[in-house]
Image (cartoon, rainbow, N blue to C red; front, side, top):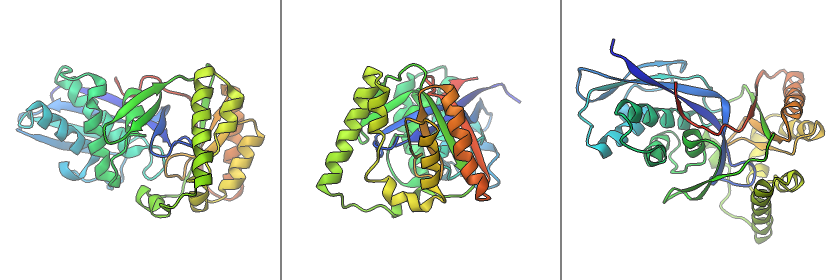
Length: 310
């Protein structure tokens, strides 16, 4: 077997309460691993998928990682080059943690590394977004961008991928609890209404602006006041069992704010430090335990690296 390149791409929290489709940040774990290696057989193919319970297709055009890598190779004029991919899923599907985005980000990074970095990391973003689009049908980078480049990322415009890294106050940790119930992104988008009142728009814009100012000024109280989603969360909360109880438990335990991670069912909280984050996580997880629902807990600083070569 020929030597290859292995890349880790992290899970992400998208929307961050007030930034629907335009805000996201990367976690330290979980994440996916992608291996790319040269092959004697011309063209790109997926040689192996693990951890997916047979749910992912080997067809390049129907697989997020494969399609992202293919679009990169076409851009480079290397689509005839013999390359095979291995996809090792280390995170759950339909969790609201950007599973498809991590695969797409990891694939373009792995292929780029295998070809000795013809493109800078940020230049890989359009191909990764095209890959994730295969999974949920939407062209948005709030998961892919942080998974690829790391940090807290603002997408000013998805169509042009005008993305910007935001500062993170020292000590900030994220707590994420993933209850073992499945919500597909397509379904979570289906419950959303296109109609937003002027009052909601004003409130949400104020909260989004407050969050940005709070991040730049390391003002934890302003961040806490601003993490209040008045548009998306009220429409999706009913899809997640015991969401309100979990949110109340997080805030009572000291979280700065708590909301739905991406399309759910994972729920995230931002906390001032790791100790509070751990206590918040236990409080959130306890609600699900008492309801007889298994869940996974992840406590992490914001991952500033994104996808990395292992």
